[in-house]
Image (tube, rainbow, N blue to C red):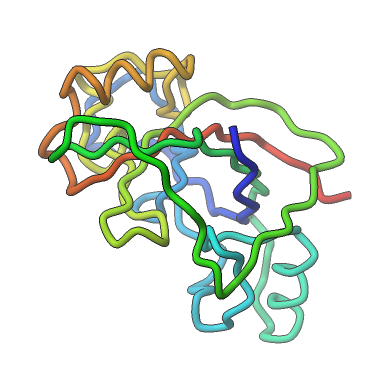
Length: 182
């Protein structure tokens, strides 16, 4: 797994339309349900994976632009080094956007919350998490945070075609960690 960065998120409870009763809240990387702390791309301080190298970068953005971080949760992410291309039915390499660079600091503490699958059709920033955004959690087994329990389960769901057509790919497997910036 490759460190790809941090993001403060406003964690949402399971929406009523998502009929996966085991899900209590959404820890997905995508901002479709649990939103990002702000529309951060406009500040151009993200790294080549379109996340942040450290919580301090987001803290500075929040301070400089009077953005409240109250009610947010800090997440740290790592990605499987390959992405699945539906058109080629194969795992292919991907790279961060080189003009931004990547220098992700390891978190002081992290707790694995488990694994998300995220679409990257544009190739740079995370888009949708089919488990939550497209209700795939209604037919696939997830934990209470709408994540797969293991890397192997996430990878198998992609390879089996269980998410084919939910969102344009490619898909990446993302390890989702709760982190502490103290």
